[in-house]
Figure: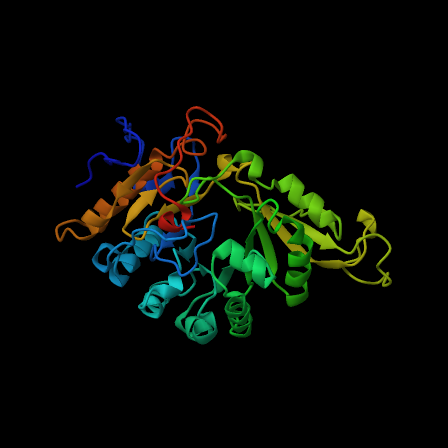
Length: 381
């Protein structure tokens, strides 16, 4: 069953694609020479929040249980990815992974198969308070938490749920359980929480977390995204500079989506000349920590993208904005199909990865750009 990877068209017709260059022996390489080593697997599309930049207030039609990959199917895909296709790190996403009842079974199985594999999870942290230690014991490496505001009213406006206290309690429990380095993901929305950026960073630094600001992307379920409404990376850096001094990190980005900055106190606040993190060379005060900015819209990093995504029902999305999905589920559930068949299909799906933003170059205003047929929760972050 290793023939051409027939795409599942979502919202636009598909054209025949040349997949002759796909070879699992070379890993998940695309026709532009990029190699995917970072696997994102969505465990479920369902979520208990209704974030305005992600889905409609009424939610979405959820997948039925038998449409979701089983724990064994997830383990098989990860094993093929690691042992055959060169996957080096794994992120479990959703929807909200904590909603899935067999989450601990999934994580413990993955850890048993891959003792050294970094396994992270992105969550909204609702319910994490009661599960953090069990997740750590099962083998989860660390947590990313989505948190856009520290103010109850603003949080409720953005998520359509009054759950800030639950999130903060969950974050604290994750830190105590050792699910670190703990990262906070924040989306700034113009006129809603953008002015809170310095406060979010101050809180994250104080708690010992690393904050990531993510530009809002055209992946909302209600399709209200407008380019002019996006708080750009440049604007975010300017907002943070009102309270901190940012210095670009000198470390190798190594395909990471976030551009990282060293964060220092502003001029004149450093009284310890012997501090090993003294930033005198930068004209700043004491070193406070790091912050990242993911500029998918205004400063795209598509040329060095190393991610491969699999949706909760077992479809490969080579690009977050792709209008093509490639089904692995029917191969996983075919008793005659081998791991080699799965690897070949996966490699073919990644070989035809578009250059950028689902088309031939970056730009959401291009005529060639078409919004994907799903929102972020249905794709998996």
